[in-house]
Length: 175
Ligand SMILES: CC(C)(COP(=O)(O)OP(=O)(O)OC[C@H]1O[C@@H](n2cnc3c(N)ncnc32)[C@H](O)[C@@H]1OP(=O)(O)O)[C@@H](O)C(=O)NCCC(=O)NCCS
Image (cartoon, rainbow, N blue to C red; front, top):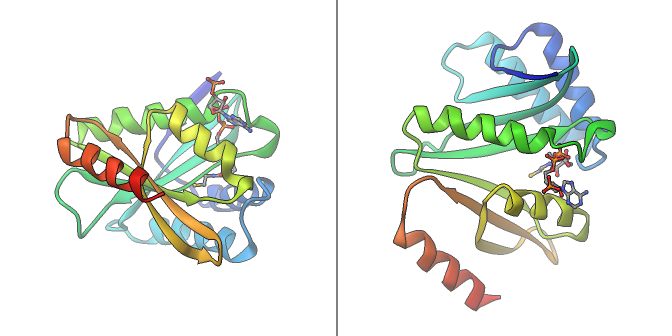
């Protein structure tokens, strides 16, 4: 059985570390950033980040960390981190986690959700995953992560928005 929760306990911090580490996608520094965000969230009620954790048959196997984009127009959120425990990937858990996030953010009046990901071959399944979840490529920032390692910005529009389509067309034309 799969269930979702937003409340974090201290024990979850280590679980988040293990899940992030298991993917093999994140270096030590990235994993530590996930841990620091979770710890900060436990200490501060006004933390700008939030988590949703996915529990599958009593084991926490995936999480998404998200937040409001502070310098963007109202209704703009971003996915900061997302991981499924390696042995549980490809089972549909990530998709259901994203659907849970979307439902939650819709209730808060969200109009769009952004996520940044990597252009490297390793991230092809991740980009495919976001596309399958309804996200569309909006912009590419060349050399953002490293030489020949671009940042791909995806967006999920929760309301109709002509500007988004124009941005996407400009992005595709520039490729
Ligand atoms: C990206 C990630 C969170 C997806 O979670 P998941 O639980 O494996 O995803 P799901 O099983 O719900 O997959 C949903 C869709 O994405 C597609 N997908 C997932 N993994 C895939 C893969 N390795 N190759 C191709 N497509 C894939 C599936 O086809 C699926 O669509 P379908 O249900 O129509 O077949 C997970 O694979 C992961 O932790 N990846 C490594 C870390 C990462 O890239 N995080 C995001 C950083 S921005």
